Image 1 (tube, rainbow over the protein chains, first blue to last red):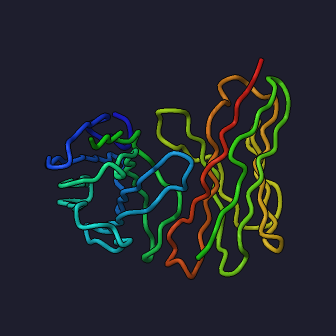
Image 2 (cartoon, each protein chain N blue to C red; image 1 turned 90 degrees about the horizontal axis):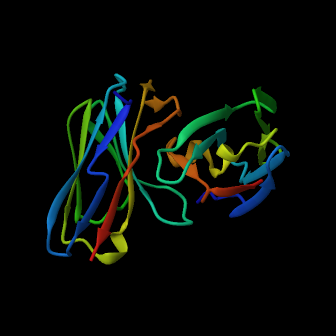
Length: 116
Length: 111
């Protein structure tokens, strides 16, 4: 299996729908991340979980709700999204030591989200 | 906040050499990464520089000058499969050790 897997790879949803993105890592890492990638923009960090506790929430709107039930799984629950939320959502994992990441992130291939 | 600047797009010829530059503000700098991302795929790690100098890994090399706030990724003997986006990212102490990313450089290789 690949290190970090994301499902679904593609998702189209209306503004009133509720959906979830799933991420699973098989690398034994203790930190997981959600990033948003929009065309020609830097990666935007949305959430960080370290040892299953959320340690960062970068002013992300409440219509995005993360969940980390264990160190291998990460979800992003979506509801009442806006068209400007259309983007590639990337999950990543890394190994943290002493509260800081080693920096080398292992990314999944992303979930391409389109909000109509 | 910190900014990472890199060119939006570059074009090079198969077999040639290309240098992709990345600049950042030096205050609180703690290390710099290069990632490669092919269209529709996950970003993958290429290199990590903390100290000044050149790190070589096969056809790819990465250079860092901490005092100048400057890094470059050097790709030699370009192959068509090197067509991808190259992402520069850095750690800063005042960003709580979150990676700050550049917008990426799209490299187009022509035969």
